[in-house]
Every structure is written in structure tokens, then in C-alpha cells.
Image (cartoon, rainbow, N blue to C red; front, side, top):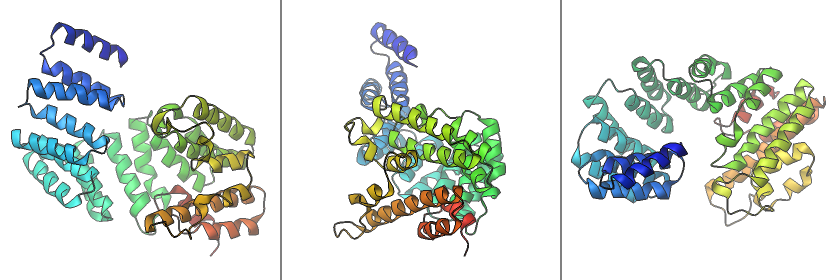
Amino acid sequence: MSAKIDELTRQIENDPTNAWLYWERGSLLGSEYQHKLALQDLTKAIELEPDEPEFWRTRGRIHQILGRITYSQNDMNRAVDLAPDAESYGARGTNHRLNHDDDEALKDLDRAVALDPLESDYPYQRGLVWQNRDDLANALTNFDEAIRLEPDHAHYYYARATALLHKKPGFIPEDALPDLETAIRLRPEAEWYKTERGCIRYCQERWTQAADDFTNQDFRWRYSIAPYLGAERVIWIWLARRFEGKPELGREAFHEYMDWYLNEARGVQRDYTRAQRPEAWPVPLARLLAGEIDAEVILNRKDFDASDPILVLYEREWVYDRIREFHFVLAQVALAQGRFEKAQGHLRQAVGLPQRNPMSWVVSRQIIR
């Protein structure tokens, strides 16, 4: 990618009034997470050709990524003014969805579908809106349509699988396996597909296959934006390897991750000190499994106090979920040790995790009610 950016830079030097060169370089910079540099190029492209809707759509997407909601919406509106076509309505509808404005998203995506009923992305985006609204029937209908239009698009199968996993009442995790298997067959390099399948295999006590799904991932790339979340993968590897009878492989995964996390990773935590990084959740859970800290250290964390009066409702729920995740991990350790009564006590305290959290799937499978 950097070679292509260098080549575009040379082309711009030779042709500094070519707006499409700035747009192409800005698009590539955005895909490399160099969003501020991308904005500079896209703004230059707009200055050179202010009537090109694609430039406004692309800059609007970058503004959205940076959380500049007003700027992103203004750019998308300008694109629609310049070209009220399916592409502009689809882009603005997606932008509304990402900004959690579901009503406006559906209006624009409906327009996009009406103007171009053969474009698969529009029903896919509409399905995501309905999923966000907890309307599983409409979400699945739209994902089905996206798959009908483009049956070789892996992510549509993944979307349908996660809709079942995250939203279907009384679901069985195995119900999502056919779609996940198809997604992985179509796009075997997609790590997040393997993570969901690994969690289902964990539910099925297929420890080796689960661990392989979690292990066979480029975690440095996957967690480059939020490195602390890589600890989730380590937790699942450690637990699966523990049940498999190969805890040493869990320790290897932990040390490999921590070496990268503490010494190389950047992402959103680039301003954290080395001392602060090990405290970012869920890293303490991985450290607990590795024996670096004990349970009391976690229980005494300030962010484990749900009674703090300054917490708003959603912050308090985050605290409860962290406590539930803590008990989930202790339950798995107890089960691996054959301490079934102890494990059931921790599982009962893990009840209440949101359905989108795969730990909740395991709790519902293991708990004796």
C-alpha cells in the first residue's frame, strides 16, 4: 500500500491539478488509518473539482470515522444535492446508520434500493439498521436479499449469522454455523469469522478446534486499532487450551500478545503509558489466567464499584458486565479443575451478560438451573 501511495505522490508532483489523484491517495490514506492526511487530500480534490459527488462522499466517510458527525452529514448532503442517485442516497443512509439515526437511514436506503434494486449493499445496510432496532425478522429478510443478489459475498453470511447469535431469542449457537462456515470458505483470511466459530466450538466442547480458530489469526492486524481488545482472544485461547490439556500453549499465546501489546502496539492507546496499559479491560482477565495477578486485585479495582454515584446507567451496566466476565473466567477455571459446585456459583454470577457477548452463550450452556 505504501508503494502505491508513493507512486501517487510522484504523479501528483507531475500533475498537481489532477483532482482524482488526490482523491485516490486520500482514499488509500484513509484505508491505512491516516485519516487527517486523507482529509487534506480529499479537501484538495474538492477544491479542484467541487462538483464531483464521489469526493464529497469519500470525505464524509472519513469525517464519520473521526466522529465529526456534523461535517460528515454536510458532505453527504452535498453529494446528494450534486447527484441524487442510488450511490449518494446509499452513502448517506449508511452514514445515518453509523450515526445511529435509524429513521433517516431507512429513508435514504429505501430510496437507494428503489433507484438500484440490484445493488446488494443497500439491503445489507438496511438489515444492519433493523438489527440495531432489534427487529430480527426484517434484518434477516434484508440479509437474505443481499445474499440473493450477491451470493459470493462472505460478509453477508457473517451478518446473517451474527444477527442470529446476537438477537434471536432462545437461540442455539449452532444455528449460525452454516452461515459462518460459508463465510469462512468464501473469505478464509477474515479473522473475525473464525472468532465467532471458535466461540461456538467452545460451547460444543470442541476444545482443539476452538483453540485453533482463535489462534490462527493475525492479531497484530486485527487489534491494531484497539490493542487492548486482543486480550479477549488470549482469554479464549487460554481457556480452550486448558480444557484441551495443553495449558502451555495458552501461556505462549499470552506472552506473545503481551510482548506486542506493551512494546509495539499503537492504535487508540498510543498515549497510554506502559504502566497504564496492563490495566485496560479485559487485559487484567488475561493476566489473571497467566498468574500475574490474583482475583482480589481485580475485585479491588475502582472500576468494579457499581455503587459509585457519579456513574450513569450505561456506565453502571459496563461495571456489572465486567464483574460477570470476571466470574465467567473463574467458572471456566473451576470447571477445568473439576470443581463443579464452585463453577456453578460463578456461572450464576455471570448470568446477565448481553447476548452479543459469546461468554453468555457458554453460560447458558453450562449452568444448571
